[in-house]
Length: 616
Image (tube, rainbow, N blue to C red):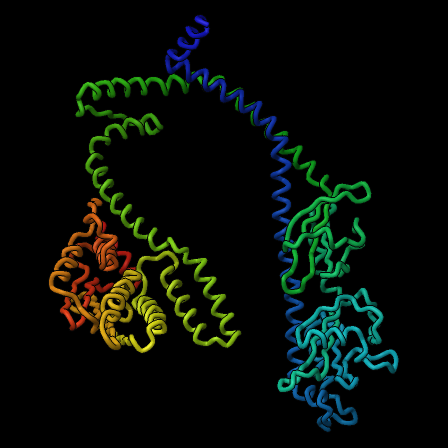
């Protein structure tokens, strides 16, 4: 035990040059072993993550392209349903005779224009609720009414909502080109009477599968990967001829809109990456073999091992040079430190080195000159601490949660025809929304006034005829920026200590105007007022907010009346200085008038510049 202790003690006391040599040798050898071991573990994960991200991006682009085509088809159904001639046909009215012998020639020419403009459309058919139909490409096989078709019934069930049917199956329709069922995708939309909401007919459009194939076929995933598309029922919309999976079970995919999964099919390990389209409901799936990434992994491993070997080789030679170049200036700096430790604070370290040791020496030289700056920084930090405490008081009620919950309650009240409750909840919702203000301290005066209107509306609902209010804002201050939530605590004070204490109804008047380059906001009530002694005590409290150094407020202040006024006073003076704040005048039985002296700041940029000047 004694030998081991002495050996450990001697290692700890080795010169720094020897320690650096040992250190450099260790950091050049150990990384070569660790990287060689970790490369095999991490490179597979890195490659898999990169492949997954790249594939998801490709799938997302494919989904965007497919959604573009489907959106165009949806728009076409609206154009068709709004056409006057189509409306006359659906209503059973006679068509315009200008078309010659074919009374519906104009409608067919109208539909033909879409198939000419959009090559992806295989055919358009309009069928009325009576079973009559018009089409440019499609016609019935038998005399069976089209209103008995599954696609017609499904369109009626969705009541005018655009619906994707998928591949048609067993329908009583064919086309001049005679497309097979697996070569088109059908979409339908019922046309409703705007007055009675009854179904007047259905628009059916066949989309060529060639469009989907051309969008998907050029996407390559590795050497053998491919894309396939299935609908929300698991039916295959598109699959290449060389696909390694036949029917893909819908149970493989979770409720999320995208994800990855691994499956073993016919003895092959396959990676599946999918993304669901929110508009079409289709799932685009990338399928590729996990073996596609093996050659890239081996190449990365080869370069990594070669790099580590080179680092080890160079580390042995470089360690001696680096140890000497670092230990010498450190020794010089130690001698300077010892002189400063002895009391000579005028000692300076001069050098032209630009590495860490040179930076350390210059930092030591600048240390004494930074004492005043550190004191100023400490003072600033105390001020910021006070501001953070004030912000934390505003955040205690979790405004995000309350705002979203109140918005939900508002719409539920609207649905129940509880108009007064809905308006009250809406006012409270605005109160919290403006109080949140995206984390900003300065907000437009208009938002602050909207905040106090919401608050007064809530209080008016509570006190009914007991409370009335008015706002008079000068035109030249509408674009001013103010600290948020400076009016509400004062108005609340006026209600609970003024209006509430008087007999009969009371009135609160709020005004805002410019005066000598400042913004003056006055809150006057005709309430009970206060005695001269109470007014003097409140004025004394307003003149003792904590200063920039964090001086404590008078004890017991937070529990006494007028704490809201004092809180506003603190925020204004912490932000703009002692020249601004609150003035209060009151007399028993005559009400109270509170004046807020606020700098007139116009625009967000001026607010930021003003804040910098105050901090300086």
